[in-house]
Amino acid sequence: MAVPKKKLLDTVWNTTTFLLTKQPEDFVESHRVKIVIVGSGYTGVAVGIAILFKRLASEVVFIDADEELAKAEAEDISHAAAFLGDPKILGTKDYSMAREATVCVITVGDKATSEDDGFLLDNNLTIFKDVIPKVCKYAPNSILLIVTAPVDILSYAAMKLSGFPPHRVMGLGTFLDSCRLQYFVAQKLGISASSVQASVICENGPTSVPIWSAVTVMGIKLKDINKDIGTKTDPESWGELHAKVVESDKDLITRKGYRCWGIGICAAEVVDAIVRNTCICITLSTYLKGCRHGLEKDVYMSLPCIVGRNGVQTLLRHPYTMEEQELTENSCRAIYETQKSILHTLE
Ligand SMILES: NC(=O)c1ccc[n+]([C@@H]2O[C@H](COP(=O)([O-])OP(=O)(O)OC[C@H]3O[C@@H](n4cnc5c(N)ncnc54)[C@H](O)[C@@H]3O)[C@@H](O)[C@H]2O)c1
Image 1: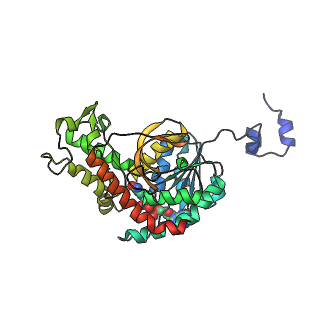
Image 2 (image 1 turned 60 degrees about the horizontal axis):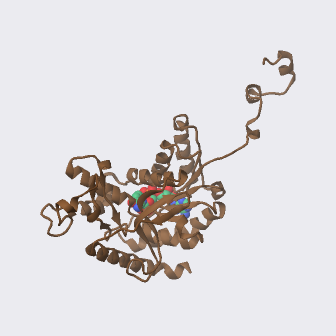
Image 3 (image 1 turned 120 degrees about the horizontal axis):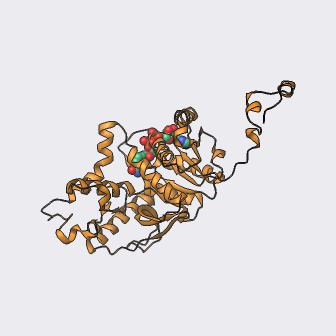
Protein backbone atom coordinates (compact mmCIF):
# COMPACT_ATOMS: atom_id res chain seq x y z
CA MET A 1 0.00 0.00 0.00
CA ALA A 2 1.46 3.36 -0.95
CA VAL A 3 2.39 5.64 1.96
CA PRO A 4 0.97 9.14 1.52
CA LYS A 5 3.88 11.46 0.73
CA LYS A 6 2.70 14.04 3.23
CA LYS A 7 2.72 11.54 6.16
CA LEU A 8 6.27 10.34 5.40
CA LEU A 9 7.66 13.81 5.31
CA ASP A 10 6.06 14.58 8.67
CA THR A 11 7.67 11.64 10.53
CA VAL A 12 11.31 11.21 11.50
CA TRP A 13 12.65 8.50 9.26
CA ASN A 14 15.75 7.02 7.76
CA THR A 15 16.16 4.59 4.88
CA THR A 16 15.53 1.52 7.07
CA THR A 17 12.35 2.87 8.64
CA PHE A 18 11.19 3.87 5.20
CA LEU A 19 11.91 0.46 3.63
CA LEU A 20 10.79 -1.88 6.42
CA THR A 21 7.51 -1.75 8.33
CA LYS A 22 9.12 -3.54 11.32
CA GLN A 23 12.56 -2.65 12.68
CA PRO A 24 15.33 -5.30 12.76
CA GLU A 25 15.55 -5.15 16.59
CA ASP A 26 11.89 -6.27 16.76
CA PHE A 27 12.57 -9.49 14.86
CA VAL A 28 12.24 -12.63 16.96
CA GLU A 29 15.42 -14.73 16.95
CA SER A 30 14.13 -18.26 16.72
CA HIS A 31 15.76 -21.61 16.11
CA ARG A 32 19.37 -20.71 15.51
CA VAL A 33 22.07 -23.29 15.09
CA LYS A 34 25.13 -21.65 16.50
CA ILE A 35 28.55 -23.24 16.05
CA VAL A 36 31.49 -21.77 17.93
CA ILE A 37 35.05 -22.25 16.75
CA VAL A 38 37.70 -21.36 19.31
CA GLY A 39 40.95 -20.52 17.51
CA SER A 40 40.94 -18.63 14.21
CA GLY A 41 44.23 -19.91 12.88
CA TYR A 42 44.63 -22.13 9.81
CA THR A 43 42.62 -24.99 11.32
CA GLY A 44 39.81 -22.93 12.84
CA VAL A 45 39.13 -21.11 9.59
CA ALA A 46 39.22 -24.35 7.58
CA VAL A 47 36.68 -25.87 10.00
CA GLY A 48 34.51 -22.76 9.69
CA ILE A 49 34.57 -22.73 5.91
CA ALA A 50 33.68 -26.43 5.71
CA ILE A 51 30.75 -25.94 8.12
CA LEU A 52 29.52 -22.92 6.17
CA PHE A 53 29.76 -24.64 2.78
CA LYS A 54 27.65 -27.48 4.17
CA ARG A 55 25.13 -24.88 5.45
CA LEU A 56 25.02 -26.51 8.87
CA ALA A 57 24.76 -23.34 10.93
CA SER A 58 22.73 -20.16 11.00
CA GLU A 59 25.50 -18.58 13.08
CA VAL A 60 29.25 -19.24 13.19
CA VAL A 61 31.32 -17.48 15.85
CA PHE A 62 35.12 -17.42 15.68
CA ILE A 63 36.72 -16.77 19.07
CA ASP A 64 40.42 -16.01 19.34
CA ALA A 65 42.73 -14.24 21.78
CA ASP A 66 43.79 -12.26 18.71
CA GLU A 67 40.47 -10.45 18.32
CA GLU A 68 41.45 -8.56 15.16
CA LEU A 69 42.34 -11.84 13.47
CA ALA A 70 38.99 -13.41 14.45
CA LYS A 71 37.06 -10.35 13.29
CA ALA A 72 38.97 -10.07 10.02
CA GLU A 73 38.48 -13.77 9.18
CA ALA A 74 34.75 -13.52 9.96
CA GLU A 75 34.44 -10.39 7.84
CA ASP A 76 36.39 -11.84 4.93
CA ILE A 77 33.98 -14.80 4.75
CA SER A 78 30.91 -12.64 5.47
CA HIS A 79 31.47 -10.64 2.28
CA ALA A 80 30.26 -13.69 0.34
CA ALA A 81 27.69 -14.83 2.93
CA ALA A 82 24.98 -14.47 0.31
CA PHE A 83 26.32 -17.64 -1.32
CA LEU A 84 26.48 -19.54 1.97
CA GLY A 85 22.80 -19.35 2.88
CA ASP A 86 23.11 -15.98 4.67
CA PRO A 87 24.50 -17.16 8.01
CA LYS A 88 25.63 -14.71 10.68
CA ILE A 89 29.44 -14.90 10.91
CA LEU A 90 31.15 -13.16 13.80
CA GLY A 91 34.69 -12.82 15.15
CA THR A 92 35.42 -11.91 18.77
CA LYS A 93 37.50 -12.57 21.86
CA ASP A 94 34.38 -12.38 24.02
CA TYR A 95 33.36 -15.83 25.28
CA SER A 96 29.81 -14.70 26.08
CA MET A 97 29.28 -14.94 22.31
CA ALA A 98 29.40 -18.73 22.79
CA ARG A 99 26.03 -18.55 24.54
CA GLU A 100 23.68 -21.33 23.45
CA ALA A 101 26.12 -22.88 21.00
CA THR A 102 25.22 -26.35 19.78
CA VAL A 103 28.82 -27.38 19.14
CA CYS A 104 32.10 -25.77 20.21
CA VAL A 105 35.08 -26.81 18.11
CA ILE A 106 38.38 -26.22 19.91
CA THR A 107 41.32 -25.48 17.59
CA VAL A 108 43.38 -23.14 19.80
CA GLY A 109 47.05 -23.89 19.79
CA ASP A 110 50.36 -22.47 20.81
CA LYS A 111 52.17 -20.74 17.95
CA ALA A 112 55.59 -21.85 19.15
CA THR A 113 56.93 -24.64 16.98
CA SER A 114 58.92 -27.24 18.81
CA GLU A 115 59.94 -30.81 18.08
CA ASP A 116 59.42 -31.52 21.78
CA ASP A 117 55.95 -33.08 22.27
CA GLY A 118 56.09 -32.46 26.02
CA PHE A 119 56.57 -28.74 25.44
CA LEU A 120 53.59 -28.69 23.06
CA LEU A 121 51.38 -30.53 25.56
CA ASP A 122 52.32 -28.21 28.44
CA ASN A 123 51.62 -25.08 26.42
CA ASN A 124 48.34 -26.29 24.94
CA LEU A 125 47.18 -27.60 28.32
CA THR A 126 47.78 -24.14 29.80
CA ILE A 127 45.65 -22.65 27.01
CA PHE A 128 42.91 -25.27 27.64
CA LYS A 129 42.79 -24.42 31.34
CA ASP A 130 41.99 -20.86 30.33
CA VAL A 131 39.65 -21.55 27.40
CA ILE A 132 37.55 -24.62 28.29
CA PRO A 133 35.94 -23.23 31.50
CA LYS A 134 35.04 -20.01 29.65
CA VAL A 135 33.39 -21.86 26.76
CA CYS A 136 31.49 -24.15 29.13
CA LYS A 137 30.24 -21.27 31.24
CA TYR A 138 28.37 -19.84 28.27
CA ALA A 139 27.56 -23.02 26.36
CA PRO A 140 26.87 -25.53 29.16
CA ASN A 141 24.73 -27.78 26.97
CA SER A 142 27.03 -27.84 23.96
CA ILE A 143 29.13 -30.64 22.59
CA LEU A 144 32.89 -30.10 22.61
CA LEU A 145 34.88 -31.27 19.61
CA ILE A 146 38.61 -31.13 20.32
CA VAL A 147 41.03 -30.71 17.40
CA THR A 148 44.13 -29.33 19.16
CA ALA A 149 47.11 -31.70 19.40
CA PRO A 150 47.89 -33.93 21.18
CA VAL A 151 44.22 -34.62 20.68
CA ASP A 152 43.72 -37.72 22.86
CA ILE A 153 45.34 -36.18 25.93
CA LEU A 154 43.66 -32.81 25.45
CA SER A 155 40.24 -34.43 24.94
CA TYR A 156 40.71 -36.14 28.29
CA ALA A 157 41.77 -32.79 29.81
CA ALA A 158 38.76 -31.03 28.25
CA MET A 159 36.40 -33.64 29.72
CA LYS A 160 37.90 -33.07 33.17
CA LEU A 161 38.02 -29.27 32.86
CA SER A 162 34.48 -28.97 31.49
CA GLY A 163 32.75 -31.32 33.91
CA PHE A 164 30.67 -32.41 30.91
CA PRO A 165 29.58 -36.04 30.65
CA PRO A 166 32.11 -37.93 28.49
CA HIS A 167 29.69 -38.47 25.61
CA ARG A 168 29.58 -34.67 25.10
CA VAL A 169 33.37 -34.32 24.77
CA MET A 170 35.04 -35.94 21.79
CA GLY A 171 38.32 -35.55 19.96
CA LEU A 172 38.78 -35.64 16.21
CA GLY A 173 41.28 -38.41 16.94
CA THR A 174 42.01 -40.72 14.03
CA PHE A 175 39.07 -39.66 11.86
CA LEU A 176 41.41 -37.99 9.34
CA ASP A 177 43.88 -40.91 9.62
CA SER A 178 41.04 -43.27 8.61
CA CYS A 179 40.20 -41.02 5.64
CA ARG A 180 43.84 -40.92 4.63
CA LEU A 181 44.13 -44.72 4.77
CA GLN A 182 40.93 -45.00 2.73
CA TYR A 183 42.42 -42.57 0.18
CA PHE A 184 45.81 -44.32 -0.06
CA VAL A 185 44.20 -47.77 -0.40
CA ALA A 186 41.90 -46.44 -3.13
CA GLN A 187 44.90 -44.92 -4.94
CA LYS A 188 46.76 -48.25 -4.84
CA LEU A 189 43.70 -50.08 -6.18
CA GLY A 190 42.96 -47.39 -8.78
CA ILE A 191 39.36 -46.88 -7.60
CA SER A 192 37.49 -44.07 -5.83
CA ALA A 193 38.01 -43.45 -2.11
CA SER A 194 34.29 -43.70 -1.38
CA SER A 195 34.33 -47.30 -2.65
CA VAL A 196 36.78 -48.31 0.10
CA GLN A 197 36.09 -48.82 3.81
CA ALA A 198 39.15 -48.46 6.03
CA SER A 199 39.74 -47.41 9.59
CA VAL A 200 42.62 -46.46 11.85
CA ILE A 201 42.05 -46.59 15.60
CA CYS A 202 43.75 -45.76 18.92
CA GLU A 203 46.28 -42.94 19.29
CA ASN A 204 46.32 -40.04 16.86
CA GLY A 205 50.05 -40.55 16.47
CA PRO A 206 52.74 -43.12 15.73
CA THR A 207 51.10 -46.01 17.63
CA SER A 208 47.81 -45.75 15.71
CA VAL A 209 46.45 -49.10 14.50
CA PRO A 210 45.22 -49.73 10.95
CA ILE A 211 42.46 -52.36 10.96
CA TRP A 212 43.60 -54.37 7.94
CA SER A 213 41.16 -57.18 8.79
CA ALA A 214 38.31 -54.77 8.01
CA VAL A 215 39.56 -53.04 4.85
CA THR A 216 36.85 -53.80 2.31
CA VAL A 217 35.59 -52.93 -1.15
CA MET A 218 31.87 -53.65 -1.57
CA GLY A 219 32.06 -56.02 1.39
CA ILE A 220 35.05 -57.91 -0.06
CA LYS A 221 37.81 -58.13 2.57
CA LEU A 222 41.24 -57.49 1.10
CA LYS A 223 42.55 -59.82 3.83
CA ASP A 224 40.60 -62.69 2.23
CA ILE A 225 42.64 -62.08 -0.95
CA ASN A 226 45.99 -61.36 0.72
CA LYS A 227 46.08 -63.06 4.14
CA ASP A 228 49.30 -61.22 5.09
CA ILE A 229 47.99 -57.76 4.24
CA GLY A 230 49.61 -55.05 6.35
CA THR A 231 52.02 -57.46 8.10
CA LYS A 232 55.83 -57.53 7.82
CA THR A 233 55.62 -60.59 5.55
CA ASP A 234 53.12 -59.01 3.17
CA PRO A 235 54.62 -59.41 -0.35
CA GLU A 236 52.67 -56.35 -1.51
CA SER A 237 53.82 -54.05 1.34
CA TRP A 238 50.36 -52.61 2.11
CA GLY A 239 51.75 -51.64 5.52
CA GLU A 240 53.63 -48.78 3.85
CA LEU A 241 50.29 -47.01 3.45
CA HIS A 242 49.87 -46.81 7.22
CA ALA A 243 53.37 -45.33 7.48
CA LYS A 244 52.25 -42.70 4.94
CA VAL A 245 49.20 -41.94 7.08
CA VAL A 246 51.37 -41.39 10.16
CA GLU A 247 53.78 -39.17 8.19
CA SER A 248 51.05 -37.16 6.39
CA ASP A 249 50.94 -34.19 8.78
CA LYS A 250 54.72 -33.81 8.84
CA ASP A 251 54.91 -34.20 5.07
CA LEU A 252 52.28 -31.50 4.42
CA ILE A 253 53.86 -29.11 6.93
CA THR A 254 57.25 -29.57 5.24
CA ARG A 255 55.77 -28.91 1.83
CA LYS A 256 53.31 -26.06 2.52
CA GLY A 257 54.03 -24.84 6.06
CA TYR A 258 50.75 -26.00 7.61
CA ARG A 259 47.82 -28.37 6.97
CA CYS A 260 44.19 -27.57 7.48
CA TRP A 261 41.78 -28.66 4.73
CA GLY A 262 41.47 -32.37 5.47
CA ILE A 263 41.01 -31.71 9.18
CA GLY A 264 38.51 -28.90 8.48
CA ILE A 265 36.37 -31.12 6.25
CA CYS A 266 36.45 -33.98 8.78
CA ALA A 267 35.49 -31.67 11.67
CA ALA A 268 32.53 -30.37 9.64
CA GLU A 269 31.42 -33.97 9.06
CA VAL A 270 31.30 -34.49 12.83
CA VAL A 271 29.36 -31.23 13.30
CA ASP A 272 26.96 -32.43 10.62
CA ALA A 273 26.43 -35.71 12.49
CA ILE A 274 25.61 -33.77 15.67
CA VAL A 275 23.40 -31.06 14.17
CA ARG A 276 21.41 -33.43 11.95
CA ASN A 277 21.61 -36.41 14.31
CA THR A 278 22.81 -38.65 11.49
CA CYS A 279 24.27 -41.41 13.72
CA ILE A 280 27.21 -42.01 11.38
CA CYS A 281 29.94 -44.43 12.37
CA ILE A 282 33.40 -42.82 12.39
CA THR A 283 36.62 -43.21 14.34
CA LEU A 284 36.75 -40.49 17.01
CA SER A 285 38.68 -40.08 20.22
CA THR A 286 36.26 -41.04 22.99
CA TYR A 287 36.30 -41.79 26.70
CA LEU A 288 37.21 -45.36 27.61
CA LYS A 289 36.80 -46.48 31.14
CA GLY A 290 39.57 -48.74 32.44
CA CYS A 291 39.71 -52.41 31.48
CA ARG A 292 37.99 -52.10 28.13
CA HIS A 293 41.23 -52.25 26.21
CA GLY A 294 43.52 -54.28 28.34
CA LEU A 295 44.68 -51.41 30.53
CA GLU A 296 43.02 -50.58 33.83
CA LYS A 297 43.18 -46.86 33.22
CA ASP A 298 40.77 -44.30 31.81
CA VAL A 299 41.91 -42.74 28.55
CA TYR A 300 40.60 -40.98 25.49
CA MET A 301 41.42 -42.85 22.29
CA SER A 302 39.86 -43.46 18.90
CA LEU A 303 37.46 -46.30 18.21
CA PRO A 304 34.53 -46.57 15.80
CA CYS A 305 31.79 -44.40 17.39
CA ILE A 306 28.18 -43.73 16.47
CA VAL A 307 27.76 -39.94 16.54
CA GLY A 308 24.51 -38.00 16.77
CA ARG A 309 22.76 -35.17 18.58
CA ASN A 310 23.97 -36.30 22.02
CA GLY A 311 27.56 -36.67 20.92
CA VAL A 312 29.07 -40.15 21.06
CA GLN A 313 25.96 -42.32 21.39
CA THR A 314 27.63 -45.73 21.41
CA LEU A 315 30.68 -47.68 20.27
CA LEU A 316 30.93 -50.37 17.65
CA ARG A 317 32.01 -53.78 18.94
CA HIS A 318 34.58 -54.91 16.41
CA PRO A 319 36.06 -58.42 16.20
CA TYR A 320 39.73 -57.41 16.04
CA THR A 321 42.38 -60.00 15.28
CA MET A 322 44.81 -61.05 18.04
CA GLU A 323 47.52 -58.91 16.48
CA GLU A 324 45.24 -55.86 16.22
CA GLN A 325 44.15 -56.37 19.84
CA GLU A 326 47.79 -56.46 20.95
CA LEU A 327 48.62 -53.27 19.00
CA THR A 328 45.53 -51.61 20.51
CA GLU A 329 46.74 -52.37 24.01
CA ASN A 330 50.21 -50.98 23.19
CA SER A 331 48.70 -47.79 21.82
CA CYS A 332 46.44 -47.40 24.83
CA ARG A 333 49.48 -47.80 27.07
CA ALA A 334 51.39 -45.16 25.07
CA ILE A 335 48.53 -42.68 25.48
CA TYR A 336 48.34 -43.34 29.20
CA GLU A 337 52.11 -42.87 29.60
CA THR A 338 51.74 -39.30 28.32
CA GLN A 339 48.43 -38.66 30.05
CA LYS A 340 49.71 -39.60 33.50
CA SER A 341 52.18 -36.69 33.43
CA ILE A 342 49.28 -34.21 33.50
CA LEU A 343 46.80 -36.07 35.74
CA HIS A 344 47.83 -34.31 38.96
CA THR A 345 47.20 -30.91 37.33
CA LEU A 346 43.59 -31.83 36.53
CA GLU A 347 42.44 -32.90 40.01
N1 LIG B 1 44.57 -33.66 14.77
C1 LIG B 1 45.03 -33.20 13.60
O1 LIG B 1 45.17 -33.96 12.68
C2 LIG B 1 45.30 -31.73 13.44
C3 LIG B 1 45.33 -31.14 12.16
C4 LIG B 1 45.55 -29.76 12.06
C5 LIG B 1 45.77 -29.02 13.22
N2 LIG B 1 45.74 -29.63 14.43
C6 LIG B 1 45.99 -28.89 15.66
O2 LIG B 1 45.15 -27.76 15.75
C7 LIG B 1 45.81 -26.74 16.49
C8 LIG B 1 45.76 -25.42 15.72
O3 LIG B 1 46.53 -25.50 14.54
P1 LIG B 1 46.66 -24.25 13.56
O4 LIG B 1 47.51 -24.68 12.44
O5 LIG B 1 45.31 -23.70 13.27
O6 LIG B 1 47.45 -23.22 14.50
P2 LIG B 1 47.45 -21.63 14.41
O7 LIG B 1 48.64 -21.18 15.19
O8 LIG B 1 47.29 -21.19 13.00
O9 LIG B 1 46.12 -21.19 15.22
C9 LIG B 1 45.97 -21.27 16.60
C10 LIG B 1 45.13 -20.10 17.07
O10 LIG B 1 44.87 -20.25 18.48
C11 LIG B 1 44.85 -18.95 19.02
N3 LIG B 1 45.08 -18.98 20.48
C12 LIG B 1 46.22 -19.33 21.13
N4 LIG B 1 46.05 -19.22 22.46
C13 LIG B 1 44.76 -18.81 22.66
C14 LIG B 1 43.97 -18.53 23.82
N5 LIG B 1 44.47 -18.64 25.07
N6 LIG B 1 42.70 -18.13 23.66
C15 LIG B 1 42.17 -18.01 22.41
N7 LIG B 1 42.87 -18.25 21.27
C16 LIG B 1 44.15 -18.65 21.40
C17 LIG B 1 45.96 -18.20 18.30
O11 LIG B 1 45.77 -16.79 18.38
C18 LIG B 1 45.81 -18.75 16.87
O12 LIG B 1 45.01 -17.90 16.08
C19 LIG B 1 47.24 -27.25 16.74
O13 LIG B 1 47.30 -27.82 18.03
C20 LIG B 1 47.40 -28.33 15.70
O14 LIG B 1 48.33 -29.31 16.08
C21 LIG B 1 45.49 -30.96 14.56
